[in-house]
Image (tube, rainbow, N blue to C red; front, side, top):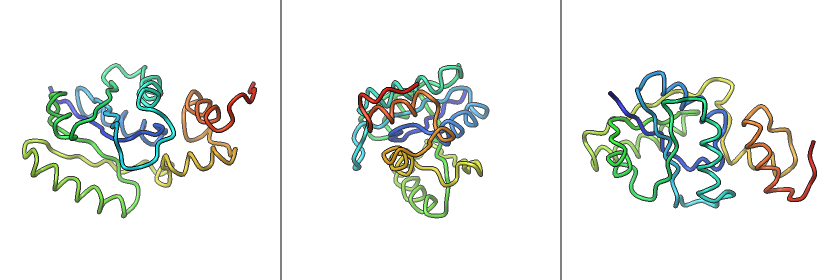
Length: 164
């Protein structure tokens, strides 16, 4: 039985992230979405919020779970019993970053394999950063996230605004 982790910040999880997780769940027996606590970037959502949003987004997929983590990704993989680390690639710039991370992770844990899945064409441009900016400017994000995440983004940017 092969377990994979899919680590990231997920601030918030998008349909692109969900697509990678679901496709991974068809390849591996179990996929654990690891929500990292201390990225070196500004976060809109707390760790608890990001975990809750991600859990709701994948709740219908029985072999996908969501867990927070604070340690090195390779240590989180060991804790989960994972043999594989999954990453999504959108554009060529992603490859360079992911390659460097893969080499470091391989030095830290030679047994952990990395699998990269190409983003689906309709999500290749999508990032949480772009999504948050569109939401901040009150743009339509309904094609890019599940409804509960769109509501959470709007609540962060426009608290108290009554929506239908």
